[in-house]
Every structure is written in C-alpha cells, then in structure tokens.
Amino acid sequence: MVRTGRFFVEGAAEGIALVLAAPLSFWGGVAVESGEIIDGSHPDRGRNVAGRILVMAGGRGSSSSSSVLAEAIRRGVAPAAIVLARPDPILTVGALVARELYGLVCPIVVCAINGVASGDRIKIVAMGADVAELHVGNPFSPRGGENAARSAG
Image 1 (cartoon, rainbow, N blue to C red):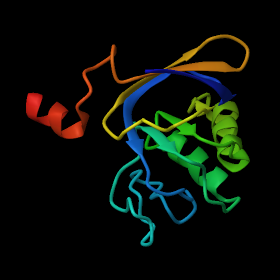
Image 2 (cartoon, rainbow, N blue to C red):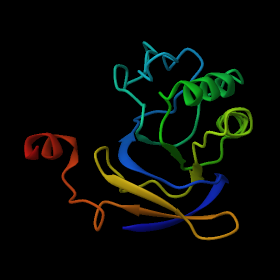
Image 3 (cartoon, rainbow, N blue to C red):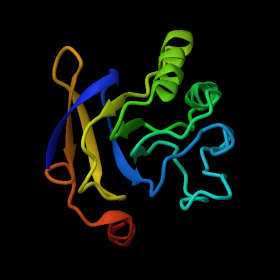
C-alpha cells in the first residue's frame, strides 16, 4: 500500500510500525531514558517507541511534550518517524527543535492511517516540497507483524 501525505518535518525513515490505540502525550507518557510508554492510563503502556515508526491519530497535549520529544531524539530513544492522522503542532515543534539544536531528524508526516498495523514495515520517501510518500507492508517486507518476524529469525 502506498500513501501520500504532507511533511510537517521533512526526512526519510524506514522501520517497523507501532500503531497506538489512543493519542499519546510525551510529557509524562514516554520515559525519556528508554522510549517506553509509561502513562498508566494509556492502552499501550509498556510498549516502546524507540526506533519505531510511531503511528497514531494525533498527540495528546501538554506543550511540554515538545521538549520531551526533542530530548528523546537527542538520546536516541525517539521514534524513527511519527505518522499522524491530523497535524500536531506540539510534536512538530519538538522535532524541529531537535533538528536545529542537534542536527537529528525525526520526520513527521500527516496522512490517512487506516489499514496500517503494528508490525508493518513503513518506508517514508520525500517526493518534493512538503509531499511524503509512505510505502506500507509490501514490497519492503512481507506483511505478518511482529510475531512473524520473530519466529522467522
């Protein structure tokens, strides 16, 4: 499946999708030391965003989430990219700050997220200006999710 979206922070990325069941606040919701989701009320508590393509409808506030995301990017425990169904200025600011201060990029793309599942391989490609193309599942990897990948190796 190929999707076209809009970059809010441009960059290329490839990795395994982590699709969240609910919006996430990085402030108090993600451990900046590890990337683990620590929000006690979040349905995906215990999952880890580090190095994954984080897919969710949108962020869930606090304006301090931008600083937590920037710090997670600096420490190397942030998502490889963030794909959202709707724009989130707070997450965008965090990724932009990390790019400017540390020279590290966490692309943020807004596009339709229906049909994307945790375990899918996603490749994000810049198509010019602020247009992103997302390749989901095949041809980059067989669809089968995390358990199929673990049992194959």
